[in-house]
Amino acid sequence: MSTDYSRALGARLRAIRNQQGLSLQGVEDKSHGRWKAVVVGSYERGDRAVTVQRLSELAVFYGVPVSELLPDPRPSSAVTSTTKIVLNLESLGSLPADEAGPLARYASTIQAQRHDYNGKVLSIRAEDLKSLAIIYDMSPDELTTRLIEWGVLNPGMDNGANGLDDEDENWGDRRRSPR
Image (cartoon, rainbow, N blue to C red; front, side):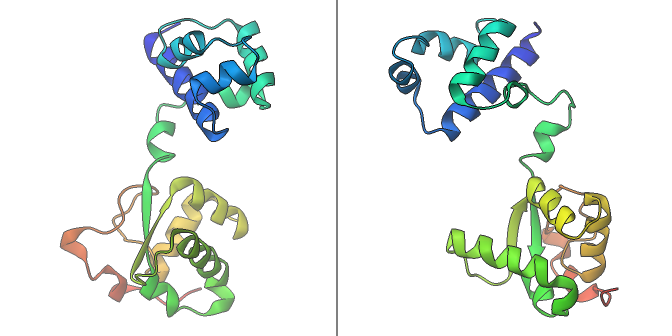
């Protein structure tokens, strides 16, 4: 197993464990000693190879499909899944509700969860953009184009790059009307 793959697999294992609110010792306790903290930790660091059988057993323990424990083989996935996209809320607020309503509700929900009501911009993840694309029944690239046309997204953004550039702070003023 390559070192990069071992580390990526370990990162997935750690992420799943953390999502379940378990420490390494918590895994050992919850499994009644079946999964030793030191062993799980070595899997997570990529210091120790995990067999397919043990990976399958760990997936059962965590209650997730084995595929959730495997890292995404696409090299760009690590970047796009954590990249933030910055939405211009001022532009969003001026769009007709029949077109931008789902996005406005989505943004409003995120603001409420974060207790973030600055009203100017909101950063979301690339995964959020994928969810919104499903709501709008289009691909993430098509939605990105639409958001740029609406002035909600920086025209220099490339589906997951940074949102607002210091040099281009007035990008929302160049929006076109919605289709």
